[in-house]
Image (cartoon, rainbow, N blue to C red; front, side, top):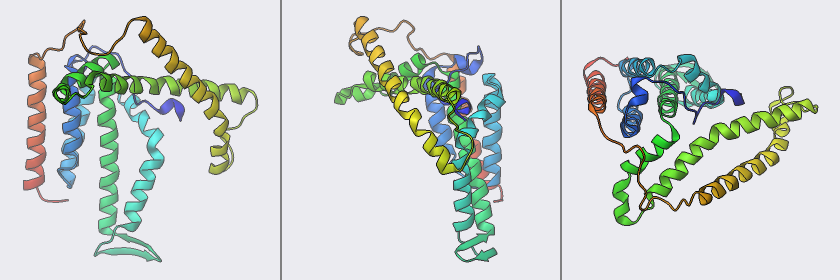
Length: 270
């Protein structure tokens, strides 16, 4: 399962999505997440799914690589769907056993909630697949630049967020190495009950934390050795500039939102 966590990883490619301004991708991701709460019909999910599929095809990131990231949150998905299925009240009761009640409304709500979570995870992870940590830092800094007026350290905040995302695949790789080393010494992480397997993971935490603190210290020393002093007075090697393709991308998102609102308002609920 460690190998299936793809959040924070970058997939190199020369697609049109990779070449977009990082600010466009950040704003687009926010718009996409917000759009998921503007509808509650089958047609809305259909439009959103088709839109996301089109973006994935344009990004040239393999679909199976993106879907692989769902394996790490499958337990969360199952819990969410189960709670909504069994605990959602409704008028059309199908099964009633103790406190467990399955209704038509509960089935519908559970399916839609599962679809919403899947689409949210796939859509938000696509941003890190198509944006390097440096681009992400520059994009966040430029988008939050207005906060400098109230003396918010925007550059430092953006840098911390970028480093945190960059450390995720590094720590996952380190965890995989530690697990393989302990398995070579006889540790068992795959058999037994869920509680037993959870206890078997405890010995991994100590070397993992030590490795994380060591990497953080090495990074701090490297930044100090290069005379890093924050964002004040720093220039960009590659300044961000909006281009024609970025304007087209904004237009695509406007059309997408308009379509979502129109579909949810005028097509029959299903």
